[in-house]
Amino acid sequence: MSEDEAESSSSGAAASEPKDPRTIARKYQLDLCKRAVDENIIVYLGTGCGKTHIAVLLMYELGHLIRKPSREVCVFLAPTIPLVRQQAMVIADSTNFKVQRYYGSGKHSRDHQAWEKEMGEYEVLVMTPQILLHNLRHCFIRMDLIALLIFDECHHAQAQKRHPYAQIMKST
Image (cartoon, rainbow, N blue to C red; front, side, top):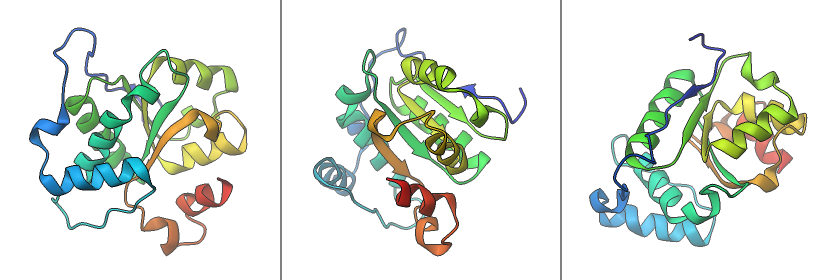
């Protein structure tokens, strides 16, 4: 499969046992997740401290908003293709959500109907920020259908004014 193609990282939710990421969470992760349910937060922790697991916990807690047949989805943004792949795998392995990943130059130029189909099938969309930005600008994806938006490596939103993260924040 080329880098321009979307790849499914579905965990086979229908056939597997229910997964509960709370069972392996540390107390501070649960506390931060609880806070994130109530308000927008930025989690600043060192490498290996479980920031991704906090995001997974938040998806789990807000699952009622994105579980199909809901029209809403979770969008998880990662700035590089390796991070998109890695984070999609972690989410799929930790939850029963249907996960799809998007990167490269080909898939972001789909039309509104194609994205509507993707958002109808998958619950978590993991993508590079440029893909989301392109689709927001062309109204292929609407912010009102994103129940949860997670920025991995969110420091990019301020570090470079022209970074897609900063542009996404300005468009919301």
